[in-house]
Amino acid sequence: MLKIWSMKKEQQKAENADAAGGKKKKVTAAQLRVQKDLSELSLGSTMKTDFPDPDDILHFTLTIEPDEGMYRTGRFTFSFDINQNFPHEPPKVRCKEKIYHPNIDLEGKVCLNILREDWKPVLNLNAVIVGLQFLFLEPNASDPLNKEAAEDLRLNREGFKRNVRTAMGGGTVKGFTMASRGFSKALRPMARQLAAKPATQQRTFVAARSLVRASAQVSKAFAGQQQTRGVKTMDFAGHKEDVYERADWPQEKLLEYFKNDTLALIGYGSQGHGQGLNLRDNGLNVIVGVRKNGQSWKDAQQDGWVPGKNLFDVDEAISRGTIVMNLLSDAAQSETWPAIKPQLVKGKTLYFSHGFSPVFKDVTNVDVPKDIDVILVAPKGSGRTVRSLFREGRGINSSFAVFQDVTGKAKEKAQALGVAIGSGYLYETTFEKEVYSDLYGERGCLMGGIHGMFLAQYEVLRERGHSPSEAFNETVEEATQSLYPLIGANGMDWMYEACSTTARRGAIDWTPKFKDALKPVFNSLYDAVKDGSETKRSLEYNGQKDYRQKFEAEMEEIRNLEIWRAGRAVRSLRPENQK
Image 1 (tube, rainbow, N blue to C red):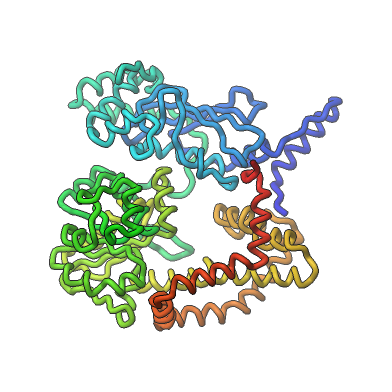
Image 2: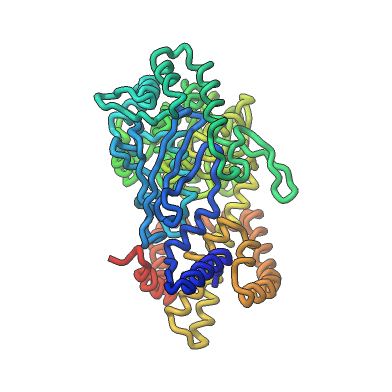
């Protein structure tokens, strides 16, 4: 369906030239995809690529010269080796210098999730490069290749910084002589000076950064707002909104801000797991409160939480916590509130990741005390995504809100916690709007509505004589594996421009018909969310004693729908699932 005009033209030119010379050189699928990825690279002034063989785009180098963080003023070169199975297999990436880094070992191997288990064919080279860039901004001690460096980073941050400077200056660290090219040549004397004389660091860093910036090769202007730091105002389709970036809250600032706080995380489900581990990796004093010896207790122990040290029953955790993070399920928040509320004394802060309980207090009975701060940070993704993006150094998008501000610091506290749990950027909302949009979206385009459309289209195709494999491929597989990721990356207008003329005309003509048919349903859905009837129905159902059995029966029915049985067979044929 899709056509990439420039690539096809280039391929045709190459084939014509080769044919004229009596030979025909085939351009492979991997080369076409790499050419597309390279054409879309967004390299800032601190990065450049080099192709030793101009005719071989599957092997190149990337040089990164960080201008901030512990590795600033350094120069690091990575080799990219891409095989013919790309994008079904990730590129092989190695660092060519010896570097003192928890996620890069002395042989140059790189620990980046998207180069391993999290790689997907929809990811591109730009995603890998962004991941490498963030390794220098935020080294991750929780998933190390160099365990000594990781231990240094965890236990002796200042010592780790000194070792980094020594390594980049070509010195010896832990018995190993490090990268003579870790600094550009003109900066090596500065590196040695920095390692030996910390008092000179501030003025020397200014000179070093200026020199690096002056000599860096600018391959392409950085797209969007990536270089801007802290709060900024952005134009969203003509509407001005403030956006808060994590760069305004570096780890040192977070540690200082929360130095007198104990974060008591109540519940260890999806969000509890992701947020809790990120808080712990950021060095904050966080404890987990769950039912003793229950499944969540066992899950927490598996993740390294220690009973009596940072794992407690719920009451003990709340009594110890200054910031109580209620990440129980909506139904569990309602059930446990009578026991939790009396422990929320003046001076504590109550944190949610969903405004459901306090907004619908008439149904949930979660009526918060009037003398405490009540805040919210709502990541726009599952707890697993919160965790995986944090480990990649990227960060999830989140909203934040203030329900009650007793201290005058609730907004600042919410922003800091948003960054601490792993948010890349945050935008402000209200508890009410967060709840309405979240419940509405889940029932609409995110889950319920999309499943309904899948079923309707699939059933019509089957009723009209199409096979299960064809119906599934045209309904689900092409959407999820090809089109949706491209829409997410480039927008719907790009999608229309990239598809065939026949597909484009039909899609444009049928869009208003679907909109007119669906808008009344979406209006009815929003009304049901806002008036609380959806909340009441959800709590009543989830509060039934046989809820689990009923839910499993519903899941079994969905699993056995022909569309999803066909889907299991189709997914098994994907290249990445071939043994």
